[in-house]
Amino acid sequence: MGVRPITKPGSFLVSPNLVDYEAARESFTWGDAGEQLDGLGDGMINLAHEAVDRHAHGSLKDHVALRWMSKSGDVRDLTYGDLSEETSRFASALRSLGVGRGDSVFALSSRVPELYIAALGCIKNGSVFAPLFSAFGPEPIETRMVMGHGKVLVTTERLYKRKIIPILDRLPDLEHVIIVSQPGRPPIPGTIDFDHFMASGDPDTPAEAMDREDAALLHFTSGTTGTPKGAIHVHGAVLHHWASAYFALDLHPGDIFWCTADPGWVTGTSYGIIAPFVHGVTNVVDEGDFDADRWYGIIQDLAVTVWYTAPTAIRMLMKAGDDIPDEYDLSSLRFIASVGEPLNPEGVYWGERVLGLAIHDNWWQTETGGIMIANYQASEIRPGSMGRPLPGVEASILALNDHGDLILTDDGSAVEILEPLVEGELALRPGWPAMFRGYLGMDERYKDCFRGGWYCTGDRAERDADGYFWFIGRGDDVIKSAGHLIGPFEVESALVAHPAVAEAGVIGVPNEVAGEIVKAFVSLHHGYEWSSDLERELKAWTRKRLGASVAPREIEYEPDLPHTRSGKIMRRLLKATELGLPTGDLSSLEQEETDHEGP
Ligand code: AMP
View 1 (cartoon, rainbow, N blue to C red):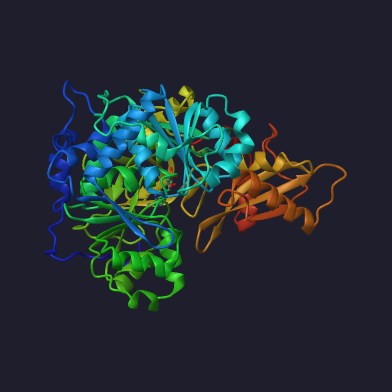
View 2: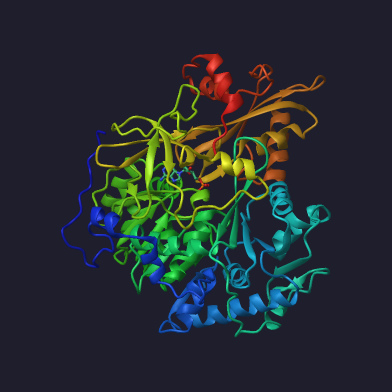
C-alpha cells in the first residue's frame, strides 16, 4: 500500500483493553458485554439505567459524568448522582404529560446540558429519542419530524423562533414543545419552559424496564433517492456501546473522554452521550464551534485522556498550523481516534508527529449503531486503513457484478472475496447488538439492505492479506461533507422548488478540508436566464430551507442535464465530467443509475 505502518510499543502506561486481537476475536461473545451491565431483571434492560443510574447507585455517585464548557468558556459539572436525578425528573415529567413508551421525543438543540438530560431522560422513560442537527434548516427538520411522528420537541428559544415557528402548522403529531431559555426570559406562549418542566418531575423515578428489542433511538440518515431514512436502534444496543468503547476507544475508569461530534449525528449520540456514561468516565462536552486554540485549550485545561474526533477536524487543525499545539500541554492525551470519512495517511502521521500520538481511524455508519471496524491501541496502524473488525463483528468483502449488484450463488448466498486487495461491497454479518432494527415505515428498504446472508453497507472497500479493511468509496450517490451524510435528492428537491429551476442534479466534489462539498447543476424554465444574481439567489434559497451545512456551496448552470432513458438525472455522469474522469460505458451507467440504491 506504500504507507509506513505504525508499530506499537511493547508496553503502555495504561495497559490496553485489547492486547491480543486474535485471542479476543476467538473468545469474546456479546454475553461478555452483558455481564458488565446491570439489567433490570427478567431479561429487561434500560439503556439509560446502564449509562447513569447504575453508576449513581454505586461508587461513582459523586464522580463527574458531564463536564460541560459553555461557549464563553465557563465549566459546569454534573456528577452521576446529579445526572441520575435530572434524567429521572425529565422522565417523570414526560410521563405526566402523557408521553410514554415508544412515543418519539425530538431534540433540536445546541450542545447544552439540557440536551443530554433530555436524551437520557427520554430513554429512561421508555420513549424514543430522535436528535436533529441544530444547523438543519426548517425543511429537513419538518421532513424528519413528520416521518418520526414527533410528539415532543425539546429545543432552545432561538431555534424555536427561527426554525420551528415557520413549520409549526405542518407538524401534526407535535403536542408539546419544551424550551430551554436563558434565565429570566418571559415564557413563550404555547410552550413549556424546561426548568418548570423539570421542577414538576420526581428525581427518584426509576428507569422503565424495557425489552432489549424495544426502540430507544431514532436516527435519520440520507439515501440517494426519496426521503431520509429513520434508523431504529434498540435498548440492547448498549452492549455494543460498552464493548466498542472498551475495545476501539480503549476507555478505562478515570478517563476524561471528549467526542467532538454533535448529537444531531449518530456519533454524537452513541459516543458523545451513551458510551462514555456506560463506562462511568467523565464525558467532556463543548458548546462552542471548532477553533484550533479552543480545542487544544480544552484538551489541556480539562485534561482530556481519550479524544474521538473526525478527519475534517484533523485537517482543519493541520491547516491551522503545527506551531499552535506547541503552546499547549497535551500530555494528558493517551489515545486519539477518528471516524466518519476517510482519514488520509498524512492525518495519521501528523498526529504522531505533532500531537505525539498517531490517530486511530475507525469505521461505522448510522445503521450499525456503533463502531464496527477499528485500529486498536495495541495493534499496528496501517495509515489509510480503517483497521480490523471488532471482536464479535464479522465483516467481509462481497463480489459485485458490472452493474454493482451482489453476485449470488444458486442457493442465494453472496460470494465473499477472499483474495487480498480486490474491491467489493463492504458487508457485515447481521446480529451485532447495535444493528438497526428497521427504517421507520420503510420495511422493503430495510429488507433490501440484507442480501445473501449479509448486511450490505453501501460502501466499497477491500481487505488486505492480514484482514485490515481499506475504504474505497460509496456505492451510491450520497455525499459526505465535513463528516455529514447528505442525500442529493433532498438538495435537488429544494432547488426545483424555486420557480426558476426546471431540474437539478446534485453531486459531491472533492474538497481539501471537508472531504467533499455539495455542488448542484441546474437547468432553468423558459423565461429565466442564468446570471450571477440568480446563482446567489439560489444559494440563499437553499441555505434558508436546508441550512448551511446541507445547501450547495457551488451551483452551475447546465442546460443539458444528462438523463437515463427513464428520465432520471445521471448524477454519476455529472460527477465524472466534473472530475475529468472517463465517463465509461454509458449503457451500464444508465442501468446503475436506475437500479442501484445502497442502504
Ligand atoms: P453516517 O451514517 O452518517 O455515519 O455515515 C456513514 C458513512 O460514512 C459510511 O458508510 C462511510 O461511507 C463513511 N465513513 C464512516 N467512517 C469512515 C471511515 N473511517 N473511513 C471512510 N469512510 C467512512
